[in-house]
Image (cartoon, rainbow, N blue to C red; front, side):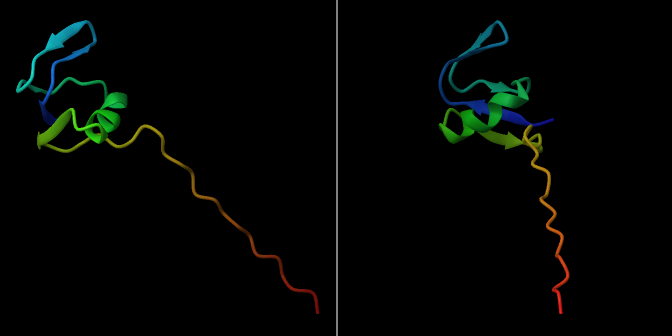
Length: 66
């Protein structure tokens, strides 16, 4: 499980944590934007995969007419 250091006070899931707290129970959907904004940093463990996983686009080639 990933652990994050909170760089600013945060409120989530009905609780409040202050700056410098180490937490491991952030909602997965919030981790990406919190990191992008510089509000948390990963200190150990693996991050969960992004929730939005795009399906590959398959392009079928059509045979050229002779």
